[in-house]
Length: 129
Image (tube, rainbow, N blue to C red; front, side, top):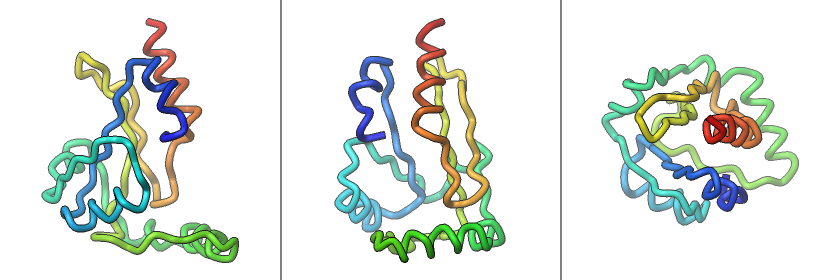
């Protein structure tokens, strides 16, 4: 998403990152990723529960997920340390200015994220209305 900041601005979009981690890990993540987006902390996971995000040991450590991380490691990529609860699954949401949720994407496992293209297309459709 960082590489698409100009497009996001043209679509009147503000990206917020919500994490259940504590302030110590959040600062480390911001330092490591250099994310330009505001990071909100939800250590009680009230937003996670409100949006229906699940925890799953089985899906967090499935063969598919382990293979994904093994391939990354073999390719020489630097993997992030596990921070907080490795079983908490994430998601992506697009919420309109009027508070109406326009997109719900619940991650099936830690590697499952919508493509940036899909998110931008959704934002474009909303903008065209």
